Image (tube, rainbow, N blue to C red; front, side, top):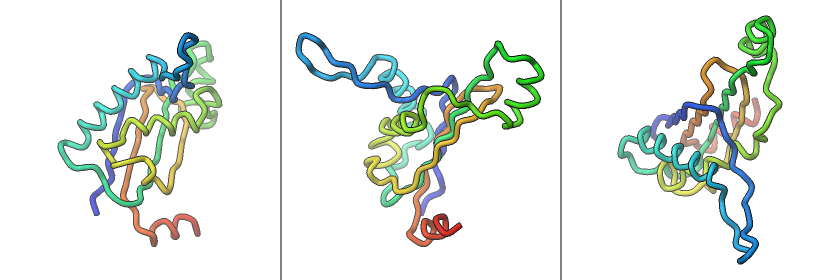
Length: 149
């Protein structure tokens, strides 16, 4: 069993955008902003994997989205609350859309996202906005211990 793989993508986190439809043909397509973000994430994942083959078996994924503190907030609100995790971001993107961006890691970090059997999403504020994804192989005993805790 290999150690965890950690991927960091600097910049404001983005979730997977809704598919758009071409009026003329009715075909669905992924918005350009989503394609660009997933491409950057895939590149960061390739760098993290350093030529290693994709992980096999059941996986656990933790997605941490760190958002910038709104510039309109007072210094007191910013320093005293947001950066000490007393205020949590309840803004878009939705947690499920943040998790959907892990599709970009298919065939790079893991064979397919269907291998994910345990997932967690955390949104918080920070000085340096970024998306951090940690993927680790798990065994059944580990998962059962997490559930019981």
